[in-house]
Length: 427
Image (cartoon, rainbow, N blue to C red; front, side, top):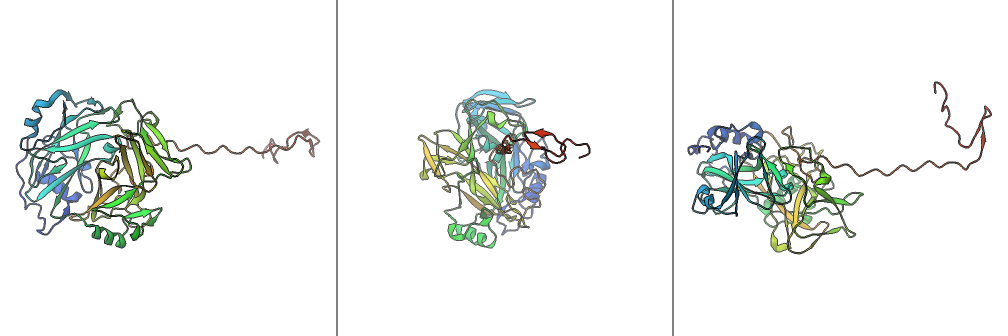
């Protein structure tokens, strides 16, 4: 079992007392060096540090459990002991996780946070796009994905594949952790003021007008149900699809896992209950270097659907200081519950909340760090081959002149003339 580091010295990072916001990549590197985030025998690689978060890696064992739980006043190890059904090794070739079964996986990373530093975890975008439900559990906590200020202890990940059976292995990252201090959230007034100063949302390359912004403890995004010429607007997960190897990138054939979804007349679709859909936002999002964003899960009081696993949007997502990129569209994970549910073009289905960064990160999303979804126009995750473009229309046949004979200068006669020079040496 990975040893838990000693509690960290709160003053070593030399954060100013008035610091508010999310820690950027360069401070996360220092936090790793100081032992706030520790990988035990497994050094945390630089590639695990994103502009505003740290990837969390699976440990060597997974426990199949009979139910989800929260530890409340107990440790996770003590609480889960009565619920373990089976133990799976994630070493070497890894293990297969079956759909609709909960698993608990101790993570490699553990924490020793100073008293004024707290954390929040979210699934990586590629995890959500596979409909793999995940959330972090910490000792003596009554909330998922929230890490209390000053927490010292291990991290555990609950994993429930919902649409696809998946294979996972040790050191695979399914979730990310942000660290933050002070009051970091922007109010709706802050968001509107910032959008006027530097656009946060675009539509077809133009900033969304202020009077068209919708805010309510966050900035709402809507659906694009128009699609392109072929009216394809997204994908729906197939039933009984093959195994997904989550450690492989760009190898899986999309048609074996996804059905294309086309819009109806009136730019709408009816969602089938309990089917998983991948759609795109109508707006394009731009996150400046001094802000971080998070997609929050949909309010169920607004309809019989759930949209989007909560997910982080790093500083630099859709951002281009030269103005060449006018935001990136967001992939939206949507599921209707209980009854068929109709959604329409530009229906508001999810929202972004924004937070201040303590400082801009030295490496932005999309700038040479292997970001997968900058400027995306497709919803499928990195595990799948890019979908084939729709076939181009067949060229119209060149009309053949009525079958009249033509007499050529050399005296040959034929029903169809040849282009000048055809069949001639040196033409």
